[in-house]
Length: 240
Image: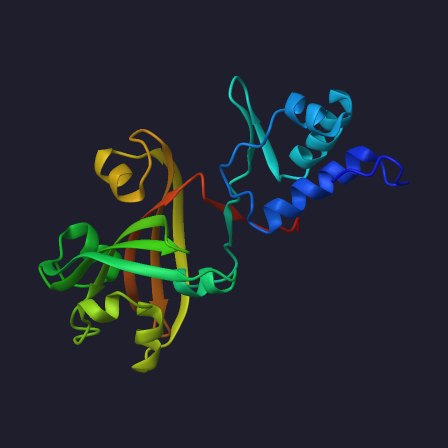
């Protein structure tokens, strides 16, 4: 409801109404909002007034315009601060989201030269290779291929891999202290796209991570494929 007699500008009243619907989840990410003309006719006001409200919400990141289609509620990206080494489950819970893991494959393989070098183990030594789909509030976010020495953590199970492996490792007395990541932008192939629920060729973030224990022994080597439309990285830099 718009109060034309109110000292609050009409464009700001419209802005508040749309923002509240987004924050109350009446309007969900990806939903299209009514057109400027529809708002103008509904409230019997000028389209310029509606446009000012929508422009403000676009500038604030609540809405986005797609040429030839309309104006949509923005799909907000999860932001990863690379200064801290956290697991996916920790990361999502810190945002008030419910993490979920679906194990797609769990097997023990012989380490090839790449895996052996990343884990600092002998070639052909026994290594877990686990494929997992990571979700937040039931939405697919990342597909990962996780590798870890079976001699280092001999009792890892499918059920454990459906939870936080970081948490399990620390509970059995291993101390994770550091990690390195390599990140690049690639496009999803058919299999990655099918798992993540996106189109083949869509942009994704490809991340290779090695986490280390306190004796500098590598714990894990993980290749992760994150949806670029749902995830972004933030790096804080200081000029020395």
